Image (cartoon, rainbow, N blue to C red; front, side, top):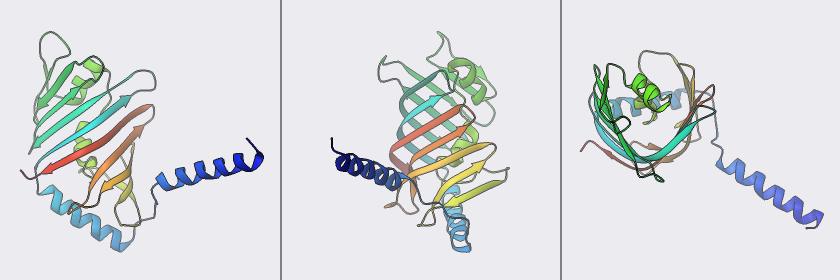
Length: 201
């Protein structure tokens, strides 16, 4: 490859990376007003479902699968199907209890869903906060720093030690909902590529 072709290839690669990176701007009155309107709208819609691909890692181990997440108020059903092994596990519960099925021979019960996920799968997933972040909302009961994109949608939410990046949105929805969500805290990584949303049905 000639020097000119190498430079052209490098330029194309750089432009591709720039195109994929969300534009991040500091909070403006217009961006804050748009976010508050989205939060008021989506918080009132307590029943929703998403279908996605999820990947989780802790720097050493990880896992991935096809995710079906059904939320109805505090009640949730979080089902993951592994693409290679075909194994399926399900986490369900509400604000006071959780049940993890499909990992051990018998269902495992507890008061905290995040603890069950960590002990059963080694996954560090902040489910309580992810319930808000997956919809592009700030989680309640903790301060958050938000950077926005050119459409006044969140590009990054930093909260509770986690950095949540929004790489793509379903902008044809009203209000818009995230398509790609990447969350990280230290070595912990959670990546969700959402295929479809069903809100309010």
